Image 1: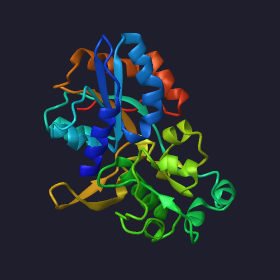
Image 2 (image 1 turned 180 degrees about the vertical axis):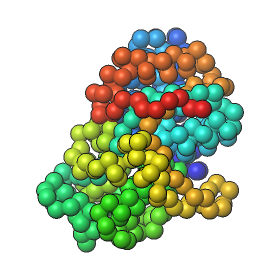
Image 3 (image 1 turned 90 degrees about the horizontal axis):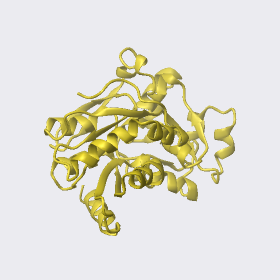
Image 4 (image 1 turned 90 degrees about the vertical axis):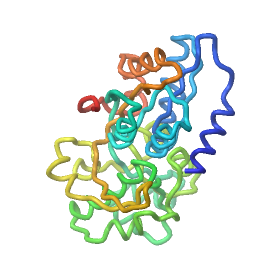
Length: 298
């Protein structure tokens, strides 16, 4: 948590002066960096004559910072309902709107010596078990993607009839040798520092990286499969209270909410509306995101 907070403070300190029309501060799931900071944020700022400030981190880490009043925020954009629920329970959000969706994929580096195998006919899970392959993922205690890759591997065990597959590829649930921040993991792939990693299709497409698409049975993208299939897997994590908690699958939908104590409440409401506007939805589509799914929270 200290590292995440320090990163946020450094990011805030590096941002420039506000425009005459005010400043909109948006905390978003780290995988959304390209679409938020290079497309939607600048477009909203230009249209409304304001300064846009974007902070990307793991959604749960951001939710806890906002909950503790350590990150002044106008809008929170998270993936899965879980991080939103943290702020609903804290009384900081009245409603969150679904604004986009995605699916889990296996991203890989075009510089990797395993790239041809991942692009070929060998089953992806067999390639990931190769000795020497460097696999990356995010922290399941602070980031939904870190949880989702575990769910994907547990579902893959059942779908491909491969008992023990998750442990062979991932090791322990919290394996620090594989864990990187969500904002850096795809950059590490681009640089060739990792061979493969977990990824959302949206972010992977935004970074123009190759990836292995996964069937609906394991990519967590199909809400119709949640009750009877996705929800059959779960695992335990140590929560902020130091106690073990069972975690369960949630649909890969991005939700946006204006904070009740937003420094700029009018801008916050306009930003959420902009995400749902034709311009906002076009930006999502152009950067690899799917359409919104489901209904508002709560």
